[in-house]
Length: 331
Image (cartoon, rainbow, N blue to C red; front, side, top):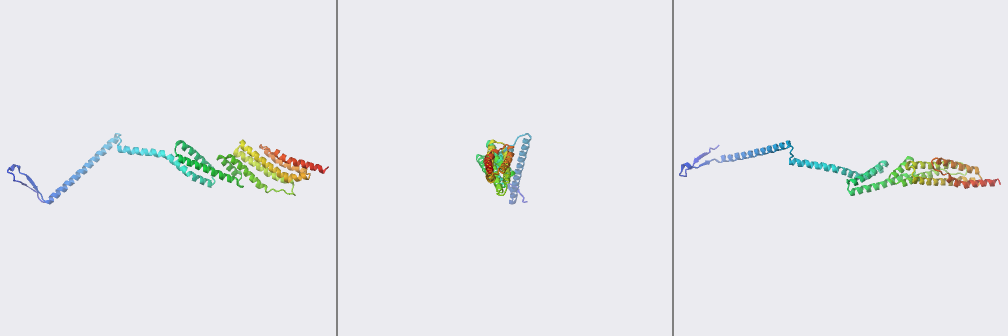
């Protein structure tokens, strides 16, 4: 390292006030500047460390005394508000999602003919719509959309059930299930009419297998036809009672329907059995046909359905004619 010397300036006359002027080489000056900068940087770092220590000490002291630091308090309150918002929004969000998925869910249930599940889903949707309107968990537009979907799918299910009830292959449990589901949908009158119509359709189809014959005994035809007709009437009576109970409106429709079936039966017997008996004076044969018909009719009277008067109104003229014809044979 180059030496640095000090010299005394003697420009002034007073030697006691002489000035010292340093003289250094260029390399020594550079080293001095670098050292000064490093010292300054070090002092800055030390100051930062002291400030950090002071901040940490204040933080620890504040927490120990239960003092909330502003930054932490703000963050905590924000988180709490978000949690509350999440809880408040959770129910509407789930309801909205359910109501949005509802139409597709019903389409699947209807396509798979899962009637009971479809009915339960419709009832649940009705309840959700009512609760949403009361609690305000859905917008007015969403509630209207849900109600529209409920109405459309109710009609779709009702049409599907009606179509199933009209099928000739639908009978027994399937028929009662369809009628019961229609009633649950709020369309009881239509359901009861379809139930009776289904029985009538099956009756007409089976009656085609019973044909009168000129060589056969009239009593055999009457017995076969009576067994079929009154069995169907009895089944209709049972199905109506099971699904609709003893409600007067449905009982009245049932009696009207059964009377019509008895009337049709009596006309067939009169035409294909009693007519020949009456014309030939076959009083005994005519009486036996009437007895067979009344015997099956009496089975329904025990269940509260009397059709004997309807039959006798049609049979009496034929029996009287047979009696008259028989008297003419002996006159």
